[in-house]
Image 1 (cartoon, one colour):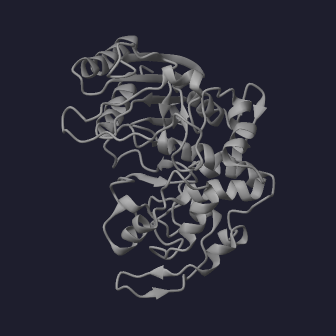
Image 2 (cartoon, helix red, strand yellow; image 1 turned 120 degrees about the vertical axis):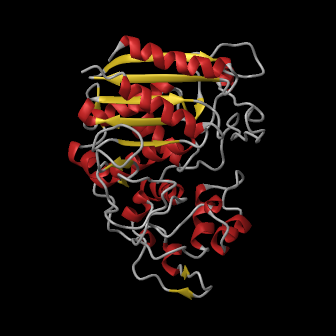
Image 3 (cartoon, one colour; image 1 turned 180 degrees about the vertical axis):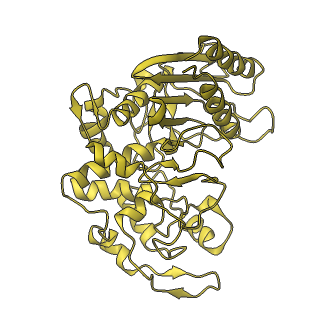
Length: 377
C-alpha cells in the first residue's frame, strides 16, 4: 500500500470531519493479514469534546447480517439444516403464506420459501421502507419492527403477512435475516445473542460486539448529529444503551472496527482465526459466490456487475460497476454508514465506521475509491 496515497485518504476524511459533514470516523485497511491503515477522525459525539478513538463503538445495523449468516452456515455444516429446507420445517407458521399480487389477488406461492431464499433475499419478504405499495403498508400497520417484542414475536408477525413475490424468483432486500435470527434460535435452542456470543463473538475475541452497549462502555459509543448539517434531515439512531428484547438478526448489533476486522480476517483466512475454525473453506466459497444469476433485482441495492451470495453482495464482473474492485469481492454495509468489503484477489479487506444515515453513500464510495487507489503493487 502506498503510504502517500493513504495519507491522501486521511486528508479527505479529515477535511470532511473538520468541515462538520459527519462527527467522526474510524477506518481500517488490512492486507496480507497485516494492518496497513488504522485511523480515527473527528469527534465521537458532536455534543462532547472527546476525540474519536479507534476502539469506539458503533451501531453497525445491517453489517449484523453477515455475522448471522455465518451462524446459519455453521449450523448447516453441522448437518442441522439444509439450504433447500423449507422455512416452514422449522417455523410451521410459514406454511400458510400467500403471495399478494399487484392486482390485489392472493395466490399460493409456486414454491416454498427456503433457508437459501432467506440468506440471499429471495424469500418474498420485504422491508416496510422499500416502497409504498400495499405490502409495505401492511408491514407498517403490523409494526413488524418494534423494540418491545421477541424474535419469535416478529417471525410470527411476518408469517401472518402475505409475501411480495414468489420465493426464489427475484431479489428484494428484506427482513429475511431477522427471520434467520429466529431460525438460529429454533435450531440451537438459545437466544440469538447467546448463541452468537458462544459460537462466534467469544471465540473470535469480539469483546465489544453485542446487542447493546453495557453501562461501563457507554462513554465509547459513537453518536450522530441530531440533524444532518447539509440537508437538515433528522439522524435517527437505534437506542442501544440497554439490553434488547428484540435481537434483530438483520440490524441490531453494535461493534468496533477491530472487532469486525477479526470477523473479516476469519473469512479471509478461509474460516479460521488463530487456530479457531468457525467454517470450512468451501462453505465460505459457497457463501461468497453469486446465488442470483439473472433474477430481477432493484438497482438501488445491487448495481451492474454485482450479484448476491449467502449474506453478502458479491462482484461478478471487473467492469460495469462505478467503483474499483475485483471479481470475487464481497461486501455489505449498515444503515448508519458503516461499511466493509473483502477482496480475496488483492488479499485485502477494509472497514469504515461512521454514524450518519444521510451521508452513508458518499463515504462508502469515497473510502472504497481511495483505498483501491492506494494499492501500489
